[in-house]
Figure (cartoon, rainbow, N blue to C red):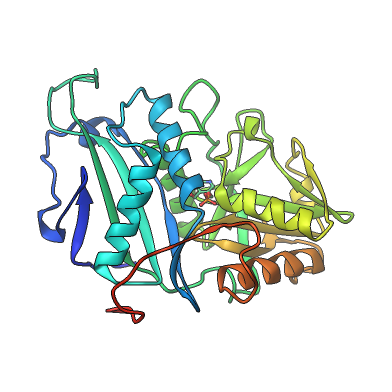
Length: 314
Ligand SMILES: Cc1ncc(COP(=O)(O)O)c(C=O)c1O
């Protein structure tokens, strides 16, 4: 997807021109992958633009920084405010919001402690729904294992983790699949390259616990809440690989994927190979909430103050 530029980028508390948001090639992050970031949707609700689960995303951002001993010179509230300022100024929505904290230009070498912390918030138009419109995607089990415990922390959303995601995604693409499912170091189901995974087996909604090297997805959390609202039984359990072939239903969740049904795994149909009733019910509720067709009963949205009710682009 080509990048569609907007007017300003938030850098350490100030809005700067998009073209001036550059970093030096000797920045620590370039060589050693030292960044933590978020991917967030700002939806176009009938009442105007609103960021989905802004506080939870920024909490995960500061949690990721804590794991990597990055001292962030802004509070969660200040970063949320920065997102509202950036989206409000650029006036482009629906959009994707990308806050990123990185180790900048300071010293050469692996030791990150003497490189400055830089915080950026970028937003750009992103109107497509990858999930809602598709009937189901065909996926495979990747030959790449997800991050093993005590190697790279899977609970932190760090730039370096996405080298593993890239291996999974590239293998999927060259083999003609949309996405891959990675197993964890012990051969149990973990997650996709950029999505959490849910299965339905005998009317129970199943997802892997955080101990199976999964990112604590904000959409995963939202879907668990929706399932509770719909009185669907939930089991967080270790998932053996063969459950992928025996499940009645399966779907991915994520900021990009939203709720995307899975039609087949390794060319074996999931259930009857069509979107099942529990997936459909969860999808329907999720999209009704994020399109503002139903009231925001869980306070998941933060409204963006804007000068005009009309977006400047998209
Ligand atoms: C590896 C990985 N797992 C899961 C997710 C889903 O997380 P979220 O729902 O917070 O977007 C993402 C996307 O951020 C991801 O990159």
